[in-house]
Length: 339
Image (cartoon, rainbow, N blue to C red; front, top):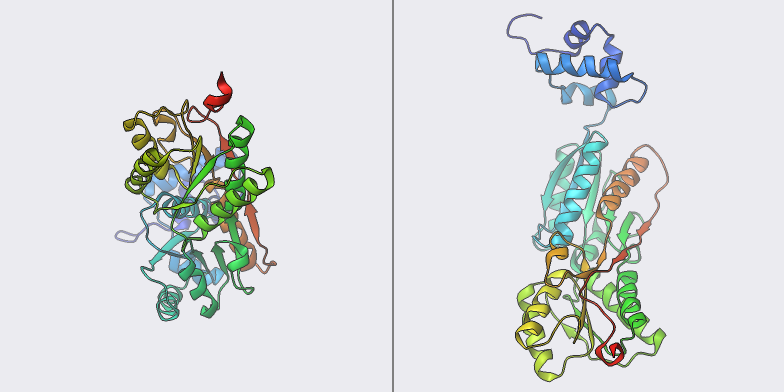
């Protein structure tokens, strides 16, 4: 290796005692390389400080190895976890992420973000679209590369494929759990209804309550914050709390539990509470929170697999991931039935 020249694949191959092709296979994660050979190549890479030349790779493969992601940049758990899951899945597939953030979606802004990402030579684009305005802006979004949208398939343009978490089912299984415990009065504290997640969970609550003939309880709207959950909890405690509350996310549930506790109501003895998201820390609420778990890691893998399938010339398809209930100590049989 000449002095001053950065190490190349041939240098790695020579030091490891393998072919240039074997080094390429190791770098691209092929399963055909024996573990001991892979270890030897990796040791040579580490010793030489070799770094892959992305520009050269792009000339050969006609791909940049980069996926564009458009997101709202919200600090809330759902959008943030979606970004992390997609980034992790992309990295496992050998791709890097180029992020573009939209604060307020419009046709003009979406076109600007598209031009920005295309200028970086992205092979495909993922759009995380939790709010109605982002989904609506996609209808004028014309991209020359494949696009996968993380949103409800019913809202996504036909030219794009979608991957979504079943938010209607999230609402249904929360209500089903409470109803099976014996609760007849199940209130819902929703998220902001310009969010598709909030609307889906609200619909699930309504559908399951109607199916089971449960007593109608007025809907209470909120944002996603524990502060608003606390305000709603104070109001409910004063007005007469139902036997169970389905909160649109875990943070709302946290605020509700604090308000109920301060009002002298015990959770779950006096009122049961269910959240959504199963975010880190939910198992350490007092009491530990029963919640609906969304499979973000599976979602991330499915988004990237779907995008890469279309990049490779495959057919677009929409995918929906089912949630699961995590039962903890914030729900119980209602006091009237507990004896």
